[in-house]
Image (cartoon, rainbow, N blue to C red; front, side, top):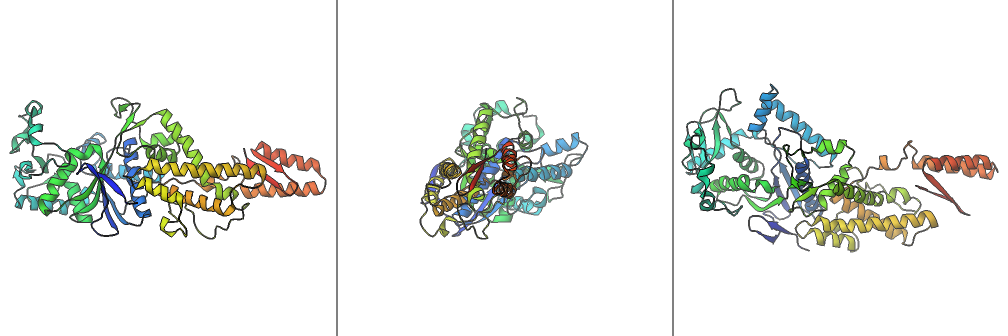
Length: 497
């Protein structure tokens, strides 16, 4: 079961082979921190979070880097409106980012470089491009000479001659920046400071870097000349990722990344999400409405990661129902394990912790569920196919739980049920789907499983004492709280309604 990935660069699906055996260097183009994260950010962050988790699950050591763009016109504009600073705006929304991602169960990256903290690397890369003839200064600015890089367009499939057709109709020849360029296709590596703007000293004068050079420098500083996976949204293929390739490879003469992976965009009721259309939804707005974060993860994972996904009320409702099914399965062991005589030992099965407890390679015998899960996901991260296995396990556990409640025994052996439950917890953890035991094992008034068992014991003592009024009172009290008791000759079983 070889992992194969669709590579945007080659436009085909290829076997995954890393530069260094057993290790993955992965970079995700993160957010520009001028506002709260929206549903598009949620999809991207969930997808690449699960990609990283899966690579770790199948045995890779992953170094995962995600940047913050904290130098940008949008950040500067917001700072001006708020009479604040670019740094203060960036810091505020980086803090908000971590809050939102924690609610979605996103594991933190190994490092979060910021453009403002990579200024030496940025200037060094520009200087090397200039020395190699790929960049030129112009009145305090520095531009990349696109035509000098013969492979420009190889990622996006665009050709300069095709893009040039009709370009004159879209260019303002009076624009001072346009007049500085030697060619209309050239793009800024360094921008001269304007009055009142934040600036950094450089060999070309005070200024700030262009957007594209920031990622090239951060990749190189943190991961080296060539990485295994460069990930991001499909909207970044051109010009951002195309320009990254041109900058980095012109200097190093090596591929910037072996695999370029891109997630599809999020639509809202069939339309592109935008503030102007009034369909722009932030992550915190959605979650504050009561939508379960795990339902959001499930919604994202039910679609192939490269395709567009349409956010509708119906879609999130379906994802919520799906999450309830998986959640029932995840809680099966905590509801019925004791009755089934399971010995869970001291292991932490990962519920609510983000841990992945059992890599598939550690199963003592072949596990068909794990094998089918990997067979699906190994096909270009086919998470919807992997979810099919989770739903199968969860539904089977739910069925057995109902049989246990009503008949006092199960059709499947306790040993096999434990194996199925542990498999479900493990595979759900790979997808970041986690149920909180604390909130799920209590009724609305805080009655825990232990407290219910204590009530049943009190009732049993009342029955032995032939105090049937007290016995009935306890039964009715539990029934009012959604707990149904089932008496048999040997014991009393219970379940939540």
